[in-house]
Image (cartoon, rainbow, N blue to C red; front, side, top):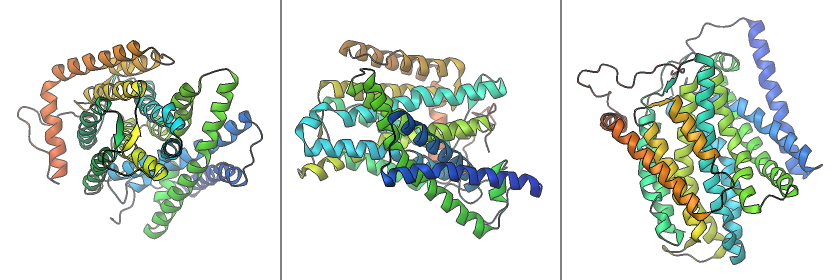
Length: 433
């Protein structure tokens, strides 16, 4: 860790007082999520959704401020990776329970709810989360192109490797322990290289500035408290929030598979999307998008990799080729999710996203909701694949550039020189640090 103060001008005591009150308010609003979960007090689905939803929102505010303040001590990439892991905890909790139930009961395994939740969460993250951050950036800046920091090339590299691996899983009839070993190893290697990045000077504003004004020991202690408290609130609130939404959906006659695939992930994905949206609203859209890219790496490696482990812990059937079984629909869902992931990588292969790309991500996602026809899912996967190829061909020169940036980061070396281009992928706006 480094011993630096933020490079922002110090605010007045009165301003700091308002910031501290806001931090305290978010902690208070998050508390009912823990209390109601521990006491199992659930008035009715609508009130449950409101109470636990507000708690998740409050925790997201705390996480966004903690993420900015943490950049004083660690690299932005590592700060975002840690925040992404905490924010995605609800998704792990829901999917772990579903995979555990599948291992204990063959009938549960046939329903395929663990895969439904995993694929729904991943597609929501890219199809809704990424466009939201972009359009907030567009609204705030009127710029039609969002560029992310070069550090994101590392996430894109690992996301590409994971996608190339996962896209072949539908050829088999299960997600096995071998998949767990490969994907969890990928995540650990990604975290290792992310942790080696150096921290940079950061300008803090709002509550993050108040937190950053504290002496080093107090600031770091407060950061730990905020991170642990936010994780507890999110972990406690996400499952009952998702359950409340599913119950409300069932009252309207929506099928269980669709509720688990879309409404439950809507609850579990909300913390990370909220954190990224708050960063975008505060003028740091590039950082917010970086958080979502890191979340995608997290879910596309560690989340998928832990499903067979949860299944086998429950079933007791251990073996390298044993694991969570897949039926035809589940294989289609994984293939469609992998195709969307490939398209998302192609969108950012030049470390930029434009209005057309953001609109395509959202529209392709939104128009596939509630479609159960097998061939339609195949058609959407084909559309993602075609668009991916077209973007890769269009930006083929950027593939080598982004790979070299990622390789330089992995080797802890300065950025490579580029002939005829002094600052490739230069940020066009969006609050890079």
